[in-house]
Length: 348
Image (cartoon, rainbow, N blue to C red):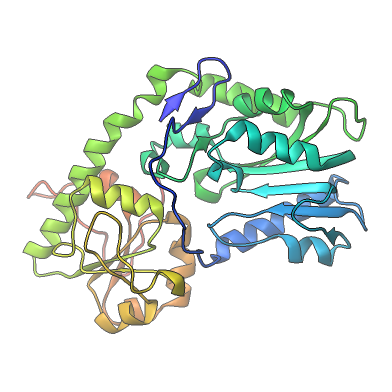
C-alpha cells in the first residue's frame, strides 16, 4: 500500500491481477446496515420520491435498490444521469480512482447527491486491520482524502453517518459546490476530519505500523492452529473473504492445519483459498464435519452464524473470532486458547 503525499489517499500503486471475483452472499449485518442507512438518509431529506437513482455495486454482495425503490425512487440504467448516485464499497475496486470519481460526478444531476460508503482508513489503522489490504481493493478512504478527490470534480462533502460495520464504516453525502441542497460541511464532517487527524491517516509512519501487526498476527494464528491439532482438536474456518486469504497466507496455514473454510456463497464452493490448498465448502458440509472449533474470519458475522447454524454448538463445537486471537490470554503452554465451550470472542 502506498500513501499519496499530496491528497492523502492510501492505495495500491499497482495490481498484477485482473480478478473476476465470485459474488459474495449478502450477510444479515449488511442488510441491516443498509436499512439503517436508508432510513437516516431519508430523514435528512436526501431521498425525495420519484428521484432517479443509480447504484454502483461491489462483489461484497447486497444492493440498496430495493430499499430505495420501495421509498419511491426510480432506478436508471448504467450510464443515465441520476439525482441520487449510490456507491457502496464499489469505487475501491476501480484501478483508476480519478476516472471513477469523474464518472460518478458526470452522472450527477443538478441538485443531486452522491452517497459514498466505505470502510474507514481511520478504523483500519486504529484497529490494526492490516488484512483488509488486498489485490482488487485499489483504495482505502478517509474523509480527508475524499474531500480533495471530490473537490477536484466540483463536489463538496456535506454530511456523514457512521456505522459499526467492519469496526467502523462511513457513509458520506456530497453535492456540487453551487448546490444549496445542503449547507456544510456540517459537524459530522468536522468530527471525521478531526478524528483522522488524531489517528494520523495521512502520516506514512503511522500507516507503516500496520506492517508490524502482520508478523504478530500471523505467528499467533499458526501457533494457535498447531496447538489445536496437537491437542487432537479439529479446526475449520468460516468466511472465504479476502481478508482471510491474506491472514492464512501470511501465517503459512494450509489444509493440514485448517482442512476447510465454509462460506454461504454457492459461487465459492469447490474453489480454494488462494495461495493455499484449503477448499471452500458449504455450511452444510461444515456442520456435517462437526469440527471442535470454527474460526470466523469476519467478526460481524458471529451473531448471525450462531443463530443460523446452532448445530455447530449442539455438536459440541465452538465459534472463535479470528480477530481476537492475538488478544486472548496465554496459558501455561504459552499459546492462546479458545474461550470456554459455547462462548464467542468479541471483536477487538
